[in-house]
Each structure stands twice: as C-alpha cells, then as structure tokens.
Length: 588
Image (cartoon, rainbow, N blue to C red; front, top):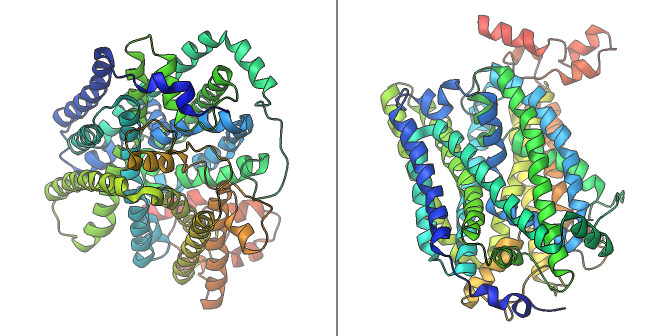
C-alpha cells in the first residue's frame, strides 16, 4: 500500500491557473449580485415578512433546490466519495431513507407549521406547551448552528489552501463576507436564489469530475468492472447490530430519523416551507427534492467508484485524497479545478447563508419580539438585518476558533448530530401525543440532550484512549501539506463525518452504547425525549384536549386507532382532526 505522497506528490505542487481563479471569483460575484438584486427590487426588504419569509411568495422549484443545498456542505461533498472508495457502495442504501424522510415532513410537519402561519418553528412550541419550552428549543438550535457554521466555513478554505496554496484566511474572509453581504442585503429571497445557483455549480463540479475521470479510466463500464473485482459493489447487509456503521437497517431506518431532524423540524428548512406561496407548493417542494437527493447521492457514490477505478487499493487512505484526485484528473484541463473548488465553496455558502438567515429569524421572533411587543415594523426589519450581519461576524469568529481546535473538531461536528435528535423528539412529543404537557417537554428535552452528549462524548473519549486501527485517515508524516497544524486539522475535519463508529472489537455494556452507529443517534435521542416526556407528563397530570391550542396536534393516533369507540379515543385526546382544529383557531 502506497502513501498519498508516492502517488500524488506531483499533483500537490499544482497551483490554480488564471481560469481557475476567474471561475472561483465568478461564483462570489454572482452570489453578491443576486443579493444586491433582491435588496434593490420588489419591496426592497422593508418588512420582516419579506426579509425573513420572502413575502411567502416562493414557488416550488427554487424552494426545493434550496432545501437540497442547505445541508449539502463541502464536507458532505467530500465525504460520500471517500466512504465509497474505502468501504464500497453500502452507503448508497441511504437513499432508501429518503422516501419516509421526505414523505413524513410533506404530509405531517408542513401542514401543521403552514396552517399555523408561523415564522419560527419554535413558535409552535409556545402554542403547544409554553414560552419556556420555546426559549429552550431556540437556544438549543442557536448553540447547534453557531458551532457548526464556523467549521463548515473553515473546511473548504483549508482544503483549498492544502491543495493549491491559496491563502487560507483570504478564502475564509472572501466567503464569509460575501455570504454575510448577500444574506443581510437580500434576505431569504436572495438566500434561496443563490442556493439555486450554487446547486447548479455543485452538480456541474461533481459531473465534471465523474465524466473526465471515467473517460480517463476507460469508461463507466470499466469503472464498474474494477469496482466489482475490488468488492466495492456491496450487497444488501441485513445485520441488525446497531453498532455496525452501515447496514440496511442503520441506513434505511436510522437514516429516516436523521432526515426528519433535518427536513422535518430544522428552522432552516421549515423557513423555506413557510416561504412558499401555498401549502401545496410547500408539499410539492418535498416531492421535488426527493429525486434531487437521489441524484446527489448517486453523484457522490459514482465519484468514489471512479476514484477506486483510477487507483485501486494502492492508496492507504482517501478522505483528503478526493481533493488530490480531482487535481490529478484535471491536471491538463485549466479551469476545471476551479469549477470543483467553486462546487465545494457553493456547498459551504449555501449552508452558512441558511444558518445566518435562520439564526436571525429565531433570535428576532423567539428572543426579541416576545419581550418588545411595541417594536415598529421598520425597526424590527432593521434589527433583523443587523442580526444577520452579526451572525456573519460570529461565523468568521467561529472559523478562527475552528482553526485552533485541532482534534476537538470531530466533537464540534458531532454536536450538530447530537442536538438534532432531541429537537426532533421535542416536536414529535408535542405533535403526536396530545396528553404531553410542558413539564414533560422540558424534562424530556433535558434528558434527550444529556443522553446525546453522554453517548457522543463517551464515543469521542473512548476513541482517544484506544489505539486507532487502520482507518481512512492520512498519516501526518506522509501527508504533503504545509505544516503540522494544517495536517492535523485537515485530517480531523474531513474525517469527522465518517469517523463516528469504527469498533476495534465487538463492544459490550456501556461501550456498546458508545459504539452506536452515528445514524442511530437521532432515533435514539429523539425516542429518549418522547419516552421521558410522556412518563413525566403522565406523572404530573396529562393535558386534556380542550386545553390544547387548536391545530398544534397532528391526529396520528386518531387515524391509527380509528377502530376504537369515540369515548375511548376522546380520552386519548385523538378525536378532532387537524383541519377542524385549524379552522377553529382561525375563527377564534
């Protein structure tokens, strides 16, 4: 097995050519122009409704592409090919989870949120429970996104610096400031339309790598043949062991909960649903994003197979190697390296711009407006823009903090996954269980977060204490990067997504919990919130249906228990259908 230096040493010395810089600059200029256009056209972002919700005027296609782009970060673009190269196509079964992962938001979460005419998803928590639960949910979300967005900004800049020598902080500042500018000036409309543009760039960059790489490898037939011979085409693995990283059950079932945490209750996505012209357009955006997600998954997997066809098993590790692979493929094609780096930066821009806008929204709607009810619309709009600007500066600060974190970066990435599950559980508790009360919600959320951090930190600490087996991580002594700190950070940063569960031997007891596949995190932690919340609610006095705010409970139990007599269903608070409740609320 050769080191990356042996195979790619000459590629590492490559630098961007003028066409590469031009393409990269065009990405930033085009994104800025979209922001300026929406700042100077239409209502000119003079109301919070326009700035935060695009006047609820967006059509299905841009909303669906924006939904797709929001969590398609640069690390995700690099992670899928690395996973396929190392372990084969088992990861491709994640596409199975997209069915329920998008169908449930379309027909459960969207109808509830849209008919309540919310701006922040956490307004729902006050309508269903009380203000304390709302503030707890909001603060948890802010904590989750602030930590995540700095790392997402730092990742592609560090990658660009490692491969081309492009100034690290020049890239961070350019990307952070451009993103802050168009988000602050153009509001949600600018964010959504730049997401559309950046999605096209992401598709173009990945397609270019696959087409050119497959051609150089002898065609897709040859790529598939080499993958088959190298045992990279995986069969269906029905192993029920939850500590196995990727099986059909972890990907197809655990992946559903991960998708629900992202597409069901995350403010960045809910805000896009609420910006749609009609509820039907919002639902259709979920249907449209489904095939787009499958295409994104296929592109990542095909890129990994092309990479395997090119190098076989010669490379000892591959996560950073995706970047060097791209430079190798495009070594005689000026402009195309710039296109792929623009693809990476598009992934980062779409993620952090969504973070800025959603953070400004929840801060304004959940933490400021409730305590300043007399605030004028003009002042609220100006403050919302100031919040978007402030979060942009916070993002740059977090990118700097990320550069100092070293091996702790894995924990920073894990936090994003840890927090998503408990928040999903909190919304499910309120939406599906009418007898859940505010005390149960608070205790359930705290228990879910405690469980999430216990497992996540336990996993992290246990791996730091045990010698690491051969993993897809490039050795710092052989990695041709500039400086040991860059190497250490790059290694931890790019590997964090796929480095969550690599058991050295079959774990037992508490160690088995620490080795739970990362795809089960959302399911495990959300279930903890629901179970604890229900137990506490029953002990402290369950809510009655007449005490519920109309429209805040989805009658899933009423639909499932249709065969019970009405008096029993009434005791379970599952008689009144959703549409009736919303109608009652609108009359009141």
